[in-house]
Image (cartoon, rainbow, N blue to C red; front, side, top):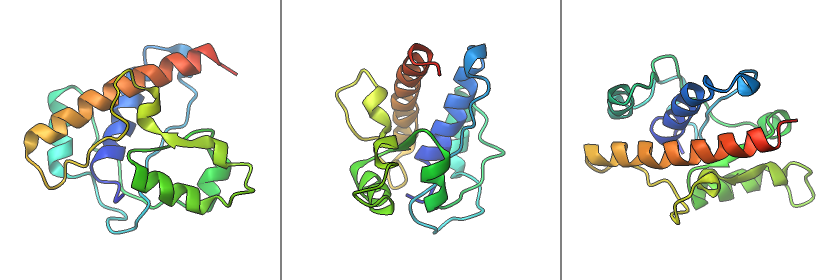
Length: 150
């Protein structure tokens, strides 16, 4: 929602993982929130620490709020949970040609979990759990992109 925990973690993890795939190195990857509470701020220090412990760098990421133009510009707009999914769908009217771009990030995961839980109010283990889910979904998204590389 605020673009300081889950989505910047996903951005950092996905950026790092695609380095191994030259066909995907031209991707433009960004993260944003559906609310503007933290615009311009770096990711939560707990997200930064958990990511760093796993070899991911979030230091250059700054929070921003999604805008309608993002739905036009990006090919995939992935939500971390159903509330954010609903917020994104509200940006794209029913008749919009961009609604098909919006889905849950964990749709690309092998797990049966559908939403990445928000670790903000929990303990430090929640940030590691988020990375586990994001790594899994990122790998699934990479396979999807390689399969449909156009």
